[in-house]
Amino acid sequence: MVIGLVSFNLQKLMKRLYRLLLLLSLAGTAFAGWKYRDPIISFYRQHIASEASEKKDVPDPARYQELITELEQKRQALADRYARARTAQDFSSAISESRTTLEATLPEMMSCWLGTPWDFHGTCETPGSGKIACGYFVSTILRDAGFQVERFRLAQQPSQGIIATFLPKEEMHIRASLDYDTFLDQVTARGPGIRIVGLDSHVAFLIVPESGDLRFIHSSGAASKCVVDENRENAGVLRRSNYRVTGNLTDNDEVIYRWLFGEKWPTKL
Image 1 (spheres, helix red, strand yellow):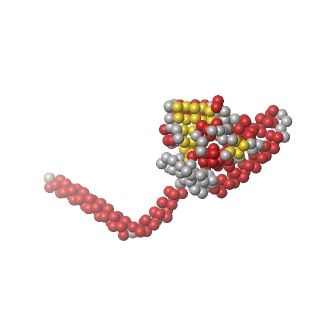
Image 2 (image 1 turned 30 degrees about the vertical axis):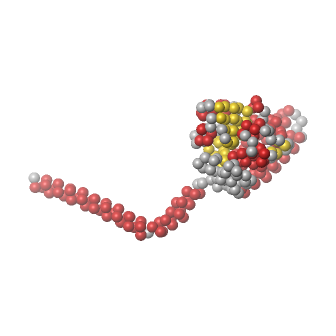
Image 3 (image 1 turned 90 degrees about the vertical axis):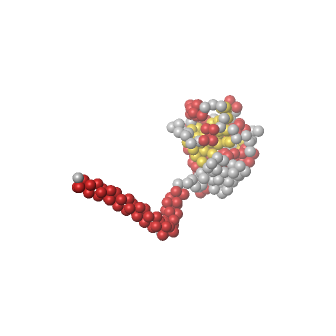
């Protein structure tokens, strides 16, 4: 009985000692943190914070200019190839390669703008050089890709007018009050391509690759307030819109032909 009592008291003592050591350890950590707060803050800013900032999208004007130059060279070469074509197969092949070239290059050009600030009145012309509104983002990309558009006038039109500048009404797909997933399933079912998409009060690019992994690239006035590249799950602006109209630029042979030969695109009002 005496031994049991001693054992019980020893266990209580050990628990108290453990709690005391834990409190001393916490107090020591707090004191050390306070005493060395300046070097700790400095370390955080130099390493942890800088690593976090590196993950943010940063505009890339240098690469953007390279892509403009490369695409113009390809356009001229493809136009020459089309002009020298003699068979239906040759013509079709030149149009097909032009389509593939645009579908590969346009998204990369858009990516160079990621992180560029949004503003309702933004009209900057190169990535990161200022702020840009959604309509100007669309019209600037198209102009720099070789489409002879009226940049200012096109950017200021309602989204349906922007799409109508390039495509006939029968190639514009208008949906209202349609479930988000159903809408995207319908878009995917119509095949790959570079689409312009108009929403309640917004315009953007909707990229549909062969894989079907949709990308919604736009100058967003939502929480991010900059140019962003969003997938199906996180495209909140696209999801919330009641009205949606789309037009597939690269699926239309006439659009490809007019791009090849640098024809002008008068803005449809």
